[in-house]
Image 1 (cartoon, rainbow, N blue to C red):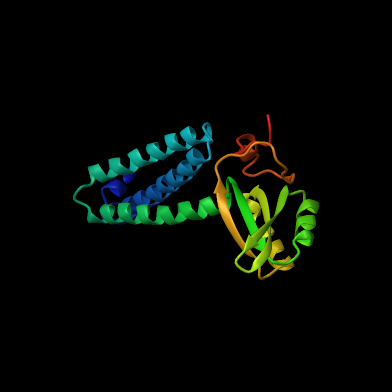
Image 2 (image 1 turned 90 degrees about the vertical axis):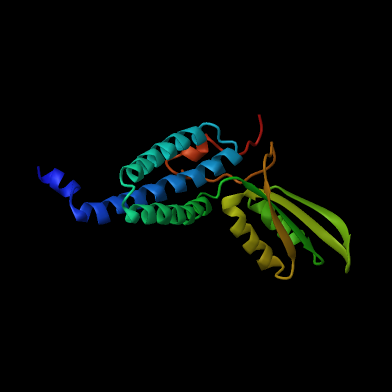
Length: 200
């Protein structure tokens, strides 16, 4: 009886229900963002699982909206949850740092110290001679896990603060040299479904 009174009360209608819809939208939109990342990375086993729960939560939220069409607070909560879900989803995507990246460095200075240091860190490195607008240059390529891009950029700045570098996303790579990293991410799930392969 008390639960029925709570559901029919103004407190539930104007505060609790909109808050639940708001939270549900944050969760399902965040999961949608992560799902798109999984699809783009080729994680064909994780993407459907996330998609299932994403649409399930969305159905629960839209169901409450349809039951309370006369409640403007629900509309505001629904839209606000969508907006906040995009923000949260992007933050999660940044934390996951899935995928791999190509870092290209162009420098007029001797690139050997940088190349040797990257090799010491077990990164695969390719160095070639080039010719730029200011004369002879060295071009250094390395492919690294996205979560380690910041560390490599710090190395570049340490050895040559004036070096030009660019970072590009890589869709697929096979074989190559990558540093081994201990530790699990999300209890090892992402080690089971890695977004790239180092060989067959």
